[in-house]
Length: 133
Length: 333
Image (cartoon, rainbow over all chains, first blue to last red):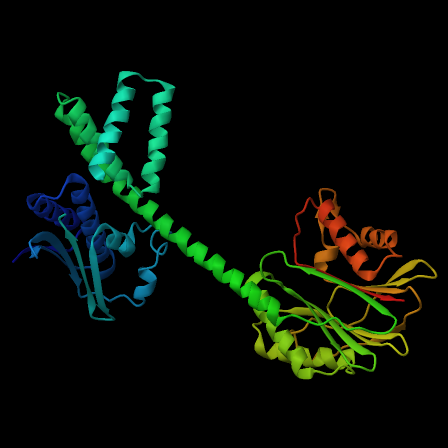
C-alpha cells in the first residue's frame, strides 16, 4: 500500500510547506515528537538542497507498509545540474564545515534507509525512509 | 531499555525537584555520562524530560509542553553534530593506525647498515619529530675500507617528507657505489629529485666519502647544514663549508667537493638543522653550545657523545623538539 502527496519546491516558503506535509503524515502514522522532528529536519535539508542548488524540484511524501510495518518515504527529485562527486557530499565534515547544515550525511542519519541517484546535467533523485517501530 | 532509562531519569529528576541539593545534581550528571556512553541523542533526553515532567506534574499549562516540543526541534541538529563528531573520531583513529603502519614500513625501508671501518668509530642518532622521519642517513661500504655516508633532510615534515625520502633512498641504492665521489653522487640524486618530486619539495644533503687507508674524508653538500670538523690536537672546531645548491632546484646544479685528512681523535660531526635550530626561552641554541657539549664528552665513544648531545638538547628545550633530529659523528681512533 502506498499513498502519496507532494510539494513543488520553488521558493524558500515551499520548504515550510514540505515540512508541514511531512509532519502531518508522520503524525498520522503515529511517529512520536522526536521522530517527527527528525523526519521534518530531513525534509528541510532535502528541500533546501533543491532550492539552493537545483532551483526547482519536488518533495514527495509516501506512506509505506511492508511486512506489517508502517513507514514514511521522502522522495526529493529535481532536474538540476546533478552532483559531480557523490562520495564527497556523503563525507562527514564536507557540508557541516562550510556551515551548510546537516547535509546529506545528516539526512542519512536521521532516516533508516537512504538512496541517492544523480546524473550530471539531468538531476538528482533521493529517497529516504523511516520505519515506525 | 528506553523505558527503563526513562523511569530512572524520572526518579533522579524527582529527587532533585524535591530537594535542590548539590548531591542530586551530581547524580544527574553521572546519569548524563551513562546516556552519552549509550549514544543517547540530546533530543531524546529532552523528550524523556518532557515525559517525566508530564507524569510528575500533569497540571502544568499547555505552553510548557509546547516549549519542550520546540526545544526538541532545536536539538535535532545538535544531535547530528554529536553523531558526526563520533564518526570523525573513528576516522581519526583509523588514520592514526594507518600512520603507525606507514612509520613501520618507512623504518624497514630506510634501514641502513653502519659500516665497520678500521680506525673509525661511528655514532649516530635520528629521531623523528612526528611519526614519519624527514631526515635520512644512508651508508654504503665495501671490504676495502671505503665508505660513503649521506645525511639528508627534506624541507618539510611528516608524510610528504617521508615519501620524498624513499625516493632519495632508491636513488642511492641504484647508484650503489662505495667509491663514488660526492660531486657525482649529489649530481645524480639531484637529477632524480628534480625529475620526480613536486616543485615545492627540496632536499638538502651532505655526502662524505671516507677511505680508511688514507683517513681522508672527501665531502660535498647540497645546501645542507655544514658539517663540523673537530681537531683534537688544537682542540678547535671548524665548519666544513662547501658550495652546492639544494637537490631538486635545478638539473644544472654542480657540486663542489673538498677533502680533509683525519688525525687521531679528530671528529667530523654531521647533522640536520633539527640539531642546530633548537630553541629555548632565551633564543636559538647556537653551534657553540653544541661544540661545548661535544667537548665535555670528547674522550668517550662516538655513540656516547651523540646520545649525550641529544639528551642535553632535549633537556634544554623542555623535551620539545621542533624538527626531526639527526646527528652522526665520525671519530678517528
